[in-house]
Every structure is written in C-alpha cells, then in structure tokens.
Image 1 (spheres, rainbow, N blue to C red):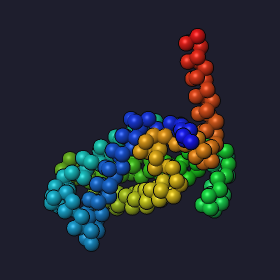
Image 2 (image 1 turned 45 degrees about the horizontal axis):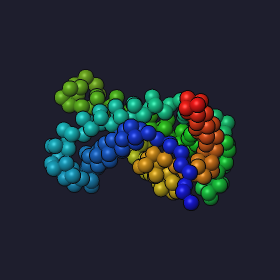
Image 3 (image 1 turned 120 degrees about the horizontal axis):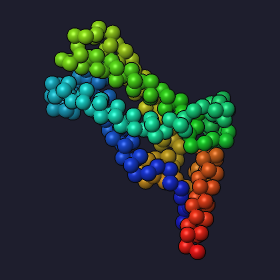
Image 4 (image 1 turned 90 degrees about the vertical axis):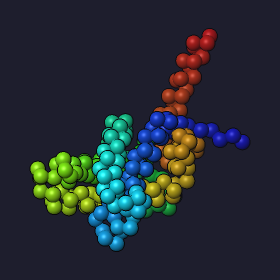
Length: 214
C-alpha cells in the first residue's frame, strides 16, 4: 500500500538547511582545533593551520546568513504555547515514544532549540567580528570576545548533538530534511495540530482546483 505523504519542507528550505549544517561542521572542526591544543590536528582537514584560520570567519559569515534566512522563515512557528509547556513537562513520556499535547509544526523541544541556536548565533557573530583580525582586533578586548565565543560555540555544539540525536531517534524525521516529506501517520502522531492544518489546506487547494476545472 502506497504511503500517504505530506510535504514538510520545500527544496529551497532543505538546501538552506544543509548549507548551514555543512558550515557548522567546518566551523566546529576548525574552532575546536583553535581553542583546544588536543584537537589542533583537525586543522589538517583544511590543509594547513593558516588556511583554516583564514577560512573559519568566512564560513562563519555564510552560516550566519543561512541561519538568518531560516530564522525569518520559521520564527513565527516557534513561539512557545501551553501545549509546548505540556510537552516539556511530559518529556519522560515523550522519550518512551508517547507524544503529549496538541503539537503544531514544532514541539517544545524543537522550539527551545530554535531560540538557543538563535542566541548562540548572535553571540558568535558579534564576538567573531571582534576577534576577526586584522579588521576588528584593535577595537575591542579580544580575550573577552574569545571567551564568550568559545562558550557560545560549546553550547551550540552540545545543542546540535542533541538535535541530531533526536532527528535519528524519531523515525521519519531525517526523511523530512532529505526528501522534504513525511507520512500522514508520522504527522498525525508527532504534530497533530500541524497535520490538521495541512490536511485542511490540501483539501482547500483541491476544492479550488476542482472549481477552476469545472
């Protein structure tokens, strides 16, 4: 029996997501190499330490631009409501595979991750520009900027690890970011309010299509 699918992400959204993801990996590798001597060997991924140092800030700008596109695309879906609070309070139940609450496009955990990423990105951008030699190095206290940059990066890395784990743990989630679709059963189970909204939208589109053809 053919699966009934719902589109969750358009191609442009998926491309943007993977650009940000690749940039994040490159920045995490080079950033860890710069801040922690035990990881300095990771600069070999870029060829030389000097090349890694040159590439790092430019990749950071690309990631920030990509994330900014995501922010303005998704911010309106990420305001936390009472159903999200219910979800957060029942996270142990959720971890057992039983969803709680009338969840919209994103659940409480995803919304929390969205705002955490937004805050970390803002800190990384500001402190990154301050530390970007030779352009801004003489204008601000570099050690303070680097300290906040490192902490924001570590928090973001930890958050992304949780994000990736959750994507694999909730079966069907990876498909959304690779193919752009999810099954109706997946949507009904994990995001019931969003499922109803999409089904109503699809039904309305079918009615309009029928009216135009008649």
